[in-house]
Image: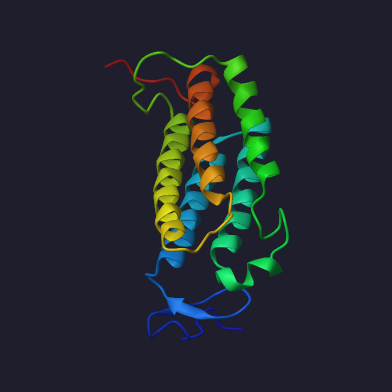
Length: 183
């Protein structure tokens, strides 16, 4: 099997369960932005260890569920499987539980935060900003009528919040592999 199919050469892409749309339609823009978020999380996970690495991997897998939902023609939404290709309220609630736990263990700062305390914290901030862009693209898709009844916008909103608190917790606890140089 070749990686290139040539089916997208005219500017259209296939949807899950059939159908083709322009690559710059709101749906592909939304799931493309989610794909970027998965990649950004992968960069963060490459620097993480233990429970944090496992949590980031779980978030990446969740975003595949989000992407599958976004890559489906709304007329075929009933074919989606909860937690596999359909984002659920339980997925949102899980994020809220993780947020509450992290904030309890690492209270949030009361001042503006500049990213860059360490590589992992910065990578989580890039992932957070990328998720916020995905959220904006998803809102555009929803406003165009593509997500009636979906919890994807809520999920992405909570995910960005979670990435913020994870970044704060890693800034407080993560130790770089080499000491920072004095400036």
